[in-house]
Amino acid sequence: MLAPYLAQLETRGDADKAAEMAAYHKAARRYLGIANPVLMDLAQDWRQHLDIAGRVTLADQLWQTDIHEARILAAKLLTQARIRPDDAVWALICSWLPDFDAWAIADAVASAAQKRLTADPARLDEVEDWTRSDHMWTRRAALVCTLPWTKQNHPKPEELAARDRILGWAAGYVDDRDWFIQKAIAWWLRDLSKHDPERARGFLAEHGARLKPFARREAGKYLPEADQPPA
Image 1: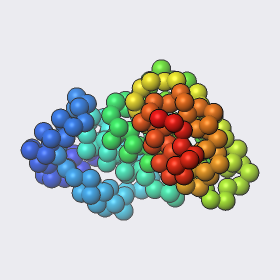
Image 2: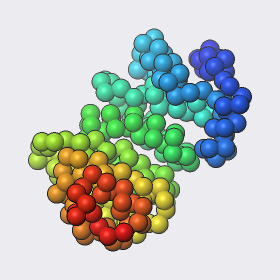
Image 3: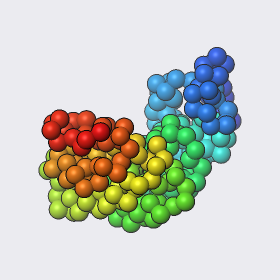
Image 4: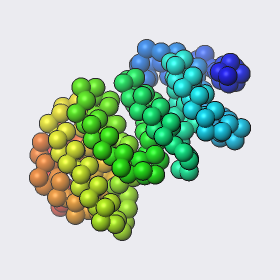
């Protein structure tokens, strides 16, 4: 199944761009040098011609190549709000977590995971296990994959409970000095502050002094200046 799809990727490669991408992303894998809008167009085309089982099979095969663009496309094939049934999609996404080693691929998969979590919030129980992982990228994914819970303007009680639960995970991360973890905390709080400034402000009042300075600034970006924690 993989060969014709991989051939479409190969023909769109750019060696010069690939070298630039390898230097930028730093993860040791093959890069083809294909722009993201091209990958998006391919994913949309392929989704139209594959049923759910076919998408899962192709996504798995693309991921196993360990080619940067193939892994991005694997995630994009599964990034869709309405997928029923979606248990196989969720299982495949979760199986990829240990392979995360760079932000672009991790964030592409997170976009797919966000759709599956909002479709079935009970999966947050599984995501909570990620917060205890020894793998930094898996811990980070717990926040990036739950960004939809920052965005409700009028959350239902169960959505507020989930929001507070995830803020609890973030609080457990504040002493982690890894840049990507600090960035993920700041990202979650920054997005939350647009819709629930009181909770964002409260988190920063309690935990902000323990964040790295760049993370404090990013987290308070959309809060009034007087509400931002000291640098």
